[in-house]
Image 1 (tube, one colour):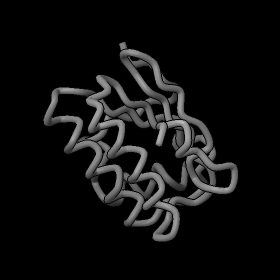
Image 2 (cartoon, rainbow, N blue to C red):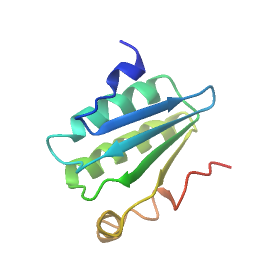
Image 3 (cartoon, rainbow, N blue to C red):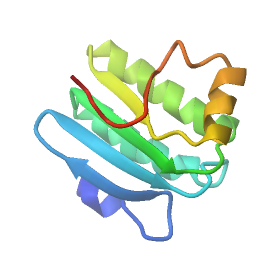
Length: 117
């Protein structure tokens, strides 16, 4: 299965822009217990391929629960093992506050827009 086959118009992974040195994943809708497994599959594949920079576009995500957070923490741990970089960007206020409450803002690279330089 190709990484592009993992996108789904009704699922949380709307688009994957995979290039040589980076990938940008555009997520959509709530990332919760039911949708986070789809996100996890994509992030596991990208980290298995050791993509140097992975950007996660959260502009279309109004809510994320603890399973979504856990999925991103797992991806961050995998990326750090090969000295890659995981960048979260476009967090809506509600999602950003969840990261702040969980004290994850210091752990993740969080930006307004994707800029991996």
